[in-house]
Image (tube, rainbow, N blue to C red):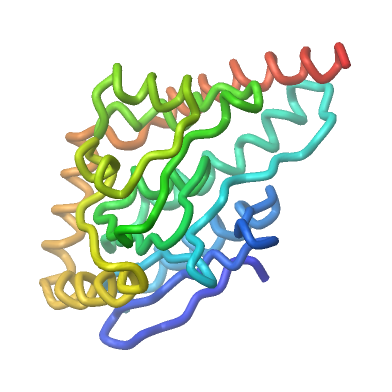
Length: 239
């Protein structure tokens, strides 16, 4: 399984993205498994805080979608796996903390941006490489501007350049930076602190805060998928 979950006690659980190859890439089925795992977490009445990390010092090198799809409905189904993760993440009552080592590219970048608290190693690297592959990252754009000013976010997307943890912190993507190798330890410390609060108060804080920040928009996510699916299907059919 590319998605692993373990309980760490006192209401804290850890999801590990155990993807493929050295880049820790996730395929569509892996992303669907992540959405299902998050949905299961949402029904866990004992969960007080959730940490998401990657394996072997690599958070996530990105998503590898299905290839050669020529029907918009097929492309939309493939892309909707991402939306399902975002929806399930947003529906949780417990706060979500990301622990980032290595690369957080594409899907990994998006996960880092939309969690409630993000801890990264000082050696971590972040990128939205989609445009370098001819794929506009519209789903990420449905929430990225809640954290990053438009001009900065547009520049990151259009250049596909890699940025350091320091720049990611300055841009609003990260909460905290720690020495390399210490991201998970720090994330667990934060999770423990959050888990100690009254769960109803924490749930209300998270829900109200995310609603006010408009972190998740079902309507805009569906619109992004519709636009991308038509474009990609037409392009694939032309080839």
